Length: 193
View 1: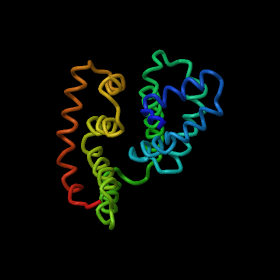
View 2: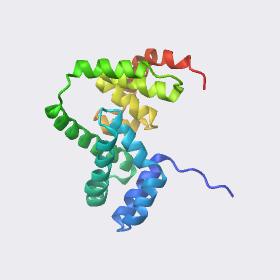
View 3: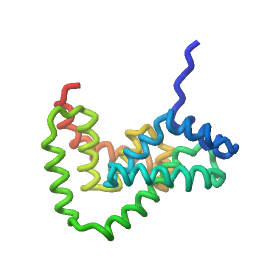
View 4: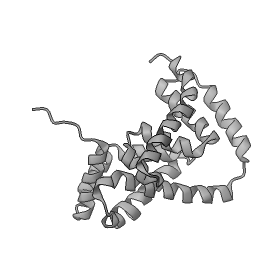
């Protein structure tokens, strides 16, 4: 018999339950196996954190939040949403520190990243989508963040809890995000996989 693949939501619940049960070694193995480390590093990198800092931030997240604070989750069914909310707050805190220490102006950094991104050869469609999401984020942070959640497979309820809106308002906002992001994807449709 073939075992069905668990959704990311159920995987997150399983990890949190293991942390709560004092089985942190097993939880860490599943965190790696299910690809959460890579997913969270990518999440941070797409928000302007360099890879090494993102990797360090994920490690701090695992120790400081998952291990130490997993008991504070009131609704275990939203474990993945909780993980993203906490990690996003850590990224924002890290971003505030980086802004204080930044030497390059934001406009120069945008120009450089756009030039670097547009000069890439042999780009895959997935790379193009991530590149366009970064450009979209520069223009519209709120819509881009929700679009990122949509692309990661969050359902309406998970997004609702993350952004703090009613169910109907969240559905409408998610629809607006898709409409606003669609023009950015036109270039990616030209890339053959």
